[in-house]
Amino acid sequence: MNYIKSGLFVSFFFALVSCSSSNDEKKEAQSVNTTKKEPVASVKTSKHVQIPNSHLYIIPPAGFAVNEIAGSIGKGEEYANFGVMKIISGYTPEKYFSELKIEADKNFPGSWKQDDIIADGHKATIYQYKTAAFTQYYLAFTDGYTDEMIIANFEESEANTGKEMYEAMKTVVVEK
Image (spheres, rainbow, N blue to C red):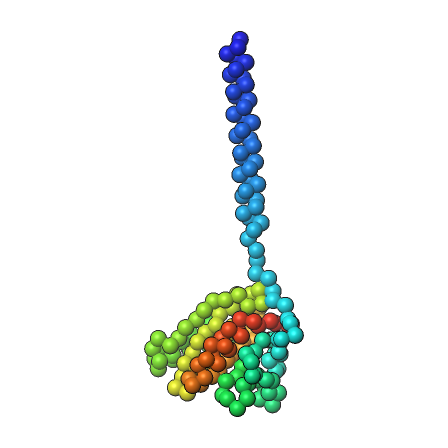
């Protein structure tokens, strides 16, 4: 009889332990699932400046100012500037950038670069395109959030400014 009681006690103990460990596993799995966070939209601050004729705001590098006449944000007398471009119907960003890439690879092999980022909580890509006269960065939302793109233009002699412009593109906020 003692063997039966001991056997029942051991069986009950193992059942209790296995149930509690499966609950712990469930809790752990739930906590893993809830810790994944979706990208959060950025908040427009007082440092953000609207790129003229667009819904796009950016925190420009020091020395940049809005030029309403040119519809851009530029750096004084230098060439460096931010502008906006909108893809019109019948033409896609994919087609546009594939054509630019072909041209860049043909004329300046190895100069084409692209970096996937999260901008304003949405998937975006920054493309680097080089020509004989200047370098351009394009920021395009790749999840269809907006069809507006930012273009950053700078001359080779303004490489340090170009790096600042690249970082500034990561601060973009869209206000629809």
